[in-house]
Length: 90
Image (tube, rainbow, N blue to C red; front, side, top):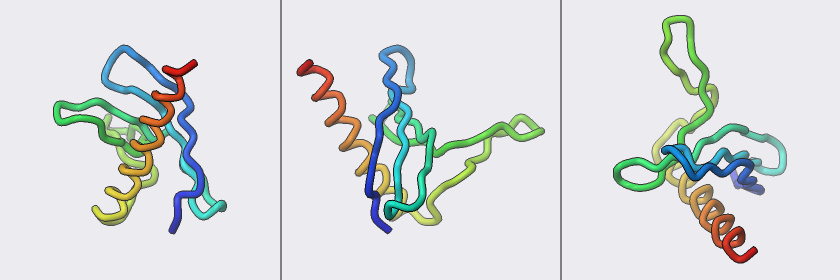
């Protein structure tokens, strides 16, 4: 599985959520609404989720193992940093 596109769609300066990202996998499958969040230990990603009937949030799509999550997080955060640098140049 290859991440073939990353699109940073929304940037916020206020609050912990810093961006909303979409990724394309193998030029065939898109996952929208991955959030870039600033936590106590730095930036991390949160997969798209929705609120269930009991008020809990459940991921709609998510990696099965930690190595895949780490790979996705590294790629997304690199693209987010590039986006910030390009925005600062404008």
